[in-house]
Length: 275
Length: 238
Image 1 (cartoon, each protein chain N blue to C red):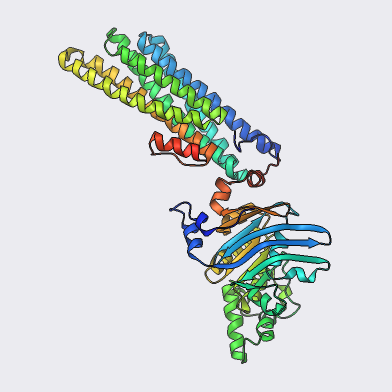
Image 2: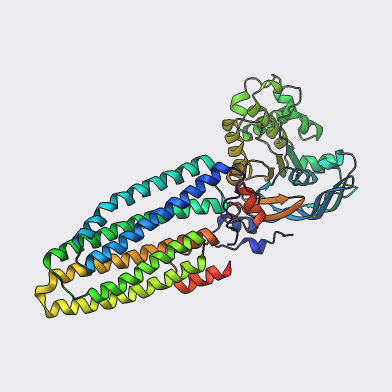
């Protein structure tokens, strides 16, 4: 099992991404994380550091545990019955599985965007305003308006919806709905955004917009993305982690993973062969 | 071969495309090798018929270059190759340019052979041509072998041989320049020999370039523009 040692990541001086990642602090850290569904061990002891302001992509064949691991990062697995988690996950050094921790607050800090766009059956405005209201982020209507506008702007949706904020969010196109969900996640000022195959239900143009958005968001947020599209992982991420049968096989600079992966299993997966 | 497992692709069409590119490269390599051998024979034996044949075959080499490049572009566009597949495509498309240039250099030698055959034999410089020619021929064969077998160690050997050829080329130049000073009437003939030696030396460089692509393909490291010793270290390292 490989651990991400910042020293290991600065192997090539000319590699901008490595230097960038190494100069940043660790945002989230997983140590010997195991997830059981009943007796079935879905994740078998994963050690991984996620750096501040990086985009890290999780790739691997179906059932490799990448989505399960993603969900441990904001305790989404808590909602699944007979799911048991071992090991330690920290956010800024704090254990997120500490019993005294407020899970709702955690999920505001570590937001999530899902595979299928899932706007609330409310207006576009209320979709965004829901979180800030819940967390008491806006005292006046004016503040709330501002949060809604800036979130929609960051998600690249403002120009398209500013004249119909009172219309239902479900009336938007798939790609717009997904950006609405991203805006909703942004509205509560998260630090980390988890994305579980955010583009798998979108067409190439909507996908390109989301990818562009991910690139812009990385200035303010840390992003972990699960994707089945290897091209997408290659395009948007700084580092790529390859999961296989519940284990983390390799994590490396994305460029290295796609040109010269260290591990045979990674090579076999990304070239599309299993021998 | 570490991590070189072509032929187990889950898409059989992709497999076939990669296999076909490799086969075509080997085919082109064989043709170019023959060009070099024929051009040398034509020069040393003052055989103008063989020299003509070399010049006529050059078109076929050019056509193969275009064909292989098209196939590489198609795989890049349709299959988005990654890792070793990507390195294979990059290495092949670079090696193809080097092979085509080797073809050009052979044609230059053949053109010199034609001229020398007209002017009558001049034994001066032939020893050097034969010697360096044999050396370069072996390098080309070895580098193509290395490509076919994904053999990075052999590719390093080719680079080492190239350094030797460069030395031999320089000492041959000195000898021939001295000879021209002694006998100015032979200058035009000796110049033809010099151009041929120059072409051979270039073929050696191209063979080395192809070897560097083999190392990139097998090891994933870029070993261009470094010394043979450094190259050897890189290959041993990974």
